[in-house]
Amino acid sequence: MIEGKRLMAKHQNILLWLLYAAVGAGALWLVVRFVLPWAAPFLLALLTARLLEPGVRYLMARFRFRRGFAAVTCSLLALAVLALIISLLVSQLMSGVGSFAQNLPELAGQVGETIERLEATFYRFVIAAPVETQDMIQSATDSISAMIEAVPGQLSAGLLGLAASAATAFPRLFLFVLTYVISVLFISLSYPQVMEFLKRQIPARWHERTRNFGQDMVATLGKWCKAQVKLIGITFVLLTISFLILGVPYGILLAALIALIDALPVLGTGTVLIPWALFSLLSGDVSLGVGLALTYGTVSITHSVMEPRFVGQQLGLHPLATLMSMYLGFRLIGVLGMVTFPMLFLLVKQFHDRGVVRLWR
Image 1: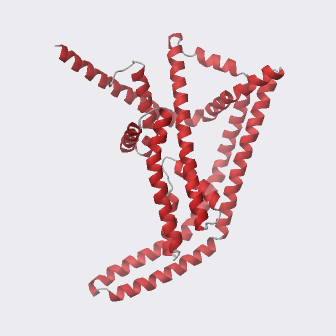
Image 2 (image 1 turned 180 degrees about the vertical axis):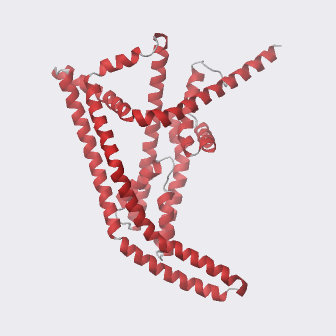
Image 3 (image 1 turned 120 degrees about the vertical axis):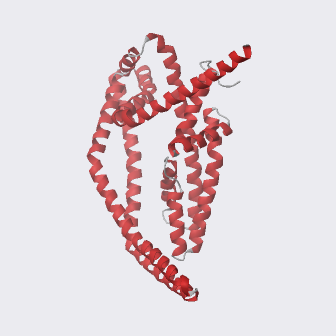
């Protein structure tokens, strides 16, 4: 009888854990799909005001500034620094894109020379091949040549499409930035009142629990961001060293861009390095192609080994538990699951540690 009650309690805990996981996943999807696109400038402004609040209070206490003057001073200074950083990054990016566009005709010429060499090589191979396979090999050769010939045109079309998309998105981006800047000023000017208003919207009996949950969420997100910054830094250092050894032009800028691409959920270093290595090999630059392939392998292995360790250390999870949650997330919802599932698992662990649920001993 006692054993049956224990088994039933264990099953109830498992069902409760599954319910929490389903509710958490559903809430996360709803927030990402509907809330964030509309509330993003205001949420970012609230986060910025929260980060500026210690500075505002310091100016008020140290120099006896009024809150309005202190808030405007801190907000304008922070926004100016942010604008300077973004403008430097954009200028470097535009410089690199412009240089690439100027070299595109030369790239097209190199593609043509590569195609001629490949056609000559394959022609000798076709002649030496059995008669019954010559048509199949010739067809494959024509297809490969057509694909390579289309690369410069696809790059040009991609650049034009990117420019058109940027021009189309500029009004929305301008409205987003303007809303964000004004919201930072307004929220920072009346930060205590804003936080008090938000607090009043939560039932009194939930205040303590909500505050703890919010603190855990902020701490979890901050730790995850710290782990990602470490991974981006390692990727950047490895790419920079490799590009400098290989003599790649704009090596530091390219390393920074590829490191940022590697941090995106869907993309990775292979998005850039693999096509680049293949093109280098086909164009006859074997040393660069092999070097890029080795770079991709080194970065991928390092990233695979260090990510569970860094994320686990920052989030307080065992590296094996982090790896399992990342793998499970990837199998269930794709690359996004590799980011969200460790955080969800940490929240479940926090519920367990506080006694809300009992899932393991």
